[in-house]
Length: 165
Image (tube, rainbow, N blue to C red; front, side, top):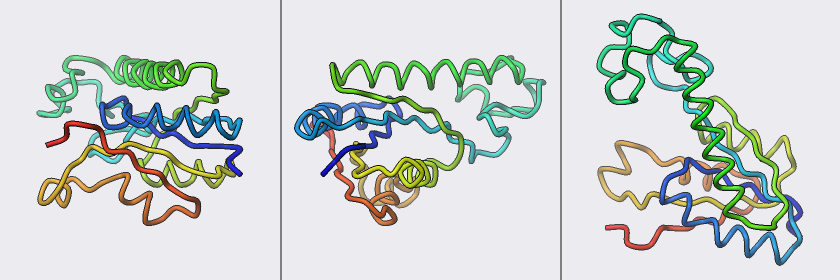
């Protein structure tokens, strides 16, 4: 029934909460888990790779302090973003134990990249965590998980992390 399961992760506690469910489902169906991290390139000033377009720190504005890339050139930011993405998928894949995994990193709008990946790889189900945001916070920030649930052509299992206030 489930041969390919997509496990999108951003490395947060919310997405890590889904790991046990992914492992259990994959083991029950002897499925391959596709661990996916999406580099969010929607923000102003970001290039296709997720890096800032300008080499000058002043061109990064206040965003540089928020991202931890202050004073870094485009190539350095590209490398840092890629290294972080690789670490996220490797850690998530390792957390799945002996389940067969495939890892991938995509660049784009997170919900669109998840849906496109699922379609391109003929995924049978998507299992993803939620951050547990509610009310105004969810409205203002949006929810990748919510958009995937509404737009996916396959079943989506959402896991809320314990202890969310």
